[in-house]
Amino acid sequence: MHPDCIFCKIIRGEAPSTMLYEDEQVVAFKDIAPIAPVHVLIVPRLHIPSAAEVTEENTALIGHLIVVAARVAREQGVAERGYRLVTNVGREGGQQVYHLHWHLLGGRQMRGLG
Ligand code: 5GP
Ligand code: ZN
Image 1 (cartoon, protein in one colour):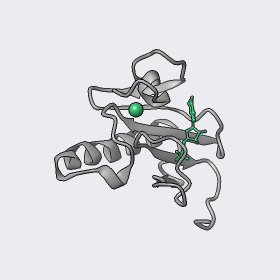
Image 2 (cartoon, protein in one colour):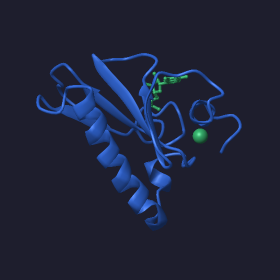
Image 3 (cartoon, helix red, strand yellow):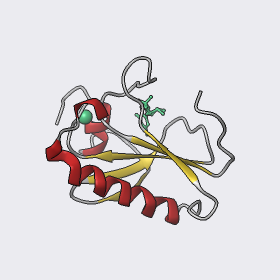
Image 4 (spheres, rainbow, N blue to C red):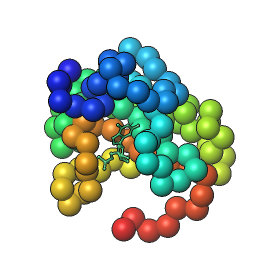
């Protein structure tokens, strides 16, 4: 829990979101500024700033998060066509929110890695 973190606030229900999935470890909610027809953020409840701070103790959590992402992709109807899972790390990685998350992007053809 991190008092100034928008994702911690969403996870605690202190800020609004369109929540699509919740369990003890992971939540998934719609991105507020979608760049694809399906744009969901898959987020561990634990406040880890980015993938750069993931440790061996977190490996089961991260594995579970990928399982959840695949489930949300099926539920959102993009599993068969395919989708993109991406996590941005740091300034040049384009990270804006320093609470670890994966973007689930789908519903249109993805191009490049720009
Ligand atoms: P990053 O650039 O850190 O990988 O991505 C952060 C994402 O969080 C952006 O796509 C941005 O639109 C989204 N975001 C930022 N603030 C909020 C918020 O308050 N609610 C939701 N649902 N998404 C947010
Ligand atoms: Zn946080």
